[in-house]
Length: 143
Image (cartoon, rainbow, N blue to C red):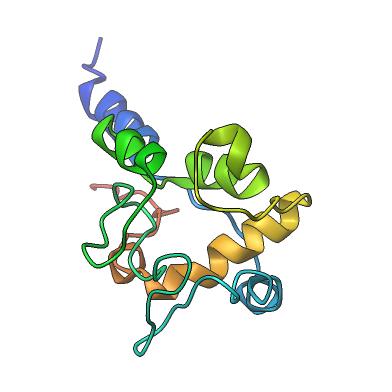
C-alpha cells in the first residue's frame, strides 16, 4: 500500500487556505456606495466615522492604528478575530448581532450576493489577498 501522506497534506493545505467568494467587484462597488458615508478605500482613503478598509481581508480586526475602535472591536481583535470570509459575511449581514457593542450603526446587507460582491470589491484593496496562489486544476505526472 502506497503512503497517502502527500495527498492528505495537499487536502489539508486546501482546507487551511482562506476561501473567498466569487462575487462581482463591479456590483460590489455599487453596493459599497452604502458604506461610503462612513468608510473609504483606495490610495487616498482617510478614516471617517469608520476606519479605512484597505488591507482588511484576511487580517486581524482593529489593525488601523489611526482609528479609535469600539471596545467591542478591540476585545474581539484581542480574542483573535480575523476578517476571513465567514466573519466578514456575518458582520456585514448583521453587525450588531455579530458584535454587540460595535460602533457601526449600519443595519447590514440583507442579500448574500451583495455581501459577496462587496467582499470581491474590497479584494484589490487588500494586496496580500491578490498574492494568494490560485488552486491548480492540473496535477503533475511523472513518466
